[in-house]
Amino acid sequence: MTETSTPDAGQTSDPPQYPVLAAPADGVPDIVEDERRLVAAAEAIAAGTGPVALDAERASGYRYGGRAYLVQIRREGAGSWLIDPIACPDLGPVQDAIGEAEWVLHAATQDLACLAEVGLSPTRLFDTELGSRLAGLPRVGLAAVVEHYLGITLAKEHSAVDWSTRPLPEPWLTYAALDVEVLVQVRDLVRADLERQGKLPWALEEFDALTSFTGPPVRTDPWRRTSGMHRVRDRRAVARIRELWQTRDDIARQRDISPGRVLPDALLVEMAVKAPTTPDGLTAALADASAGTSRRGRARPPHRSVARYQREWLAAIRRVTTLPDSELPPTTVRSDAPPPPRAWADRDPVAAARLLQVREQLTAYGEEHQVPVENLLTPDYLRRVLWSPPQPLDEASLQGALATLGARPWQRDIAVPLILGAVADHPNTDQ
Image 1 (spheres, one colour):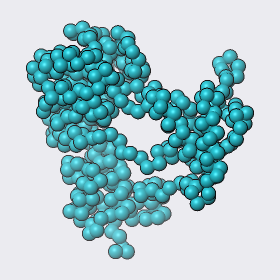
Image 2: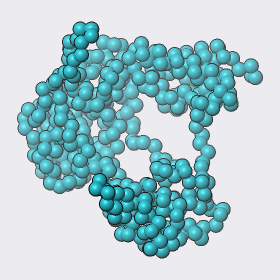
Image 3: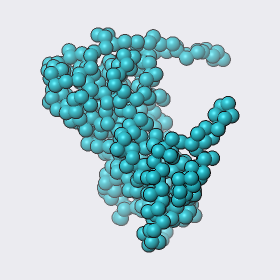
Image 4: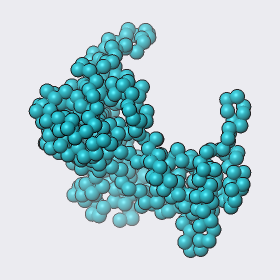
């Protein structure tokens, strides 16, 4: 582990300056763009030894969806490989080459879904980001973790670029190759830290659960997450948001661009509220919202998509005009989640007291063991079992309820005694 000196009391010190890892030790590999090179990559990876470091680059904010536009792989004895999954959409040969070897990723949930789309799924994995969290590191981005454990800095200036660009610029490829250059070394040091702290069994349970991760849950009515729609209280305007959102999504999918680049949420909501019916009315309705002013005080032209897709926007608005009231969506939908904790004291004081006690105890436990409290138990899980407790309310029922929600055994072993203690301290006199 990297050691840093502590300044004397009363002194200030600049952040430590770490040497920059500017290029891979073996140079930047050529991109794999055809079947012949893909087979060569698979053969090299199969001949390598030890864990396999993987990473993927997406074009979030530029393209529709979250597909991978570059896959980076490194293994001892095989070197690093950069694979273009657009030119080689089936990475089955690489999957076969990896076999049951352990994957090493940083923030695995960001990449597992897009890697699965090209035929790559782990049987075992080690997440250096999650492992660092459990080990108590205050900052767990890849650059910060590499600095902590190896005393070197990774440049991150290309993390938000459009990775669907072809050809990919050389500096971007250098950045991509560096993301897996030292990942296995970091894995070894994180694992050693976890073992020393007695947290390795916790981490292994977390990593095992990640092998089944397929992406975030599919949301019901995703259009309800449109930014700004919480201010809309008219059901027909809400229906226009739904119709315009779907229209925008269809355009984005057809053009393979991010929906927000087709039309920002703010303009979509403005359009739904004002409900223009003509091209001129559409332009006028959105003129103020979309124009704004430049730094020099000059009015900006309306968003280009307002005019480019005016026929589609107006058609969506017209479809809602003829919709009967019985088919209009409600302005809000009832959630199966517990109410906000701030409302518990009035609605169920006993549950509120239990929640406060367990929260405080979990926070103290997290501070003592240097683990973020949300990693000890997902806050939503705690709220659910305390707001609607299983019956009978005992250790077995709590273990089962938390397991059904998704809590791992190590988390249940910590939380269940605390919950039972809170139940004993705050009995429900109505039962």
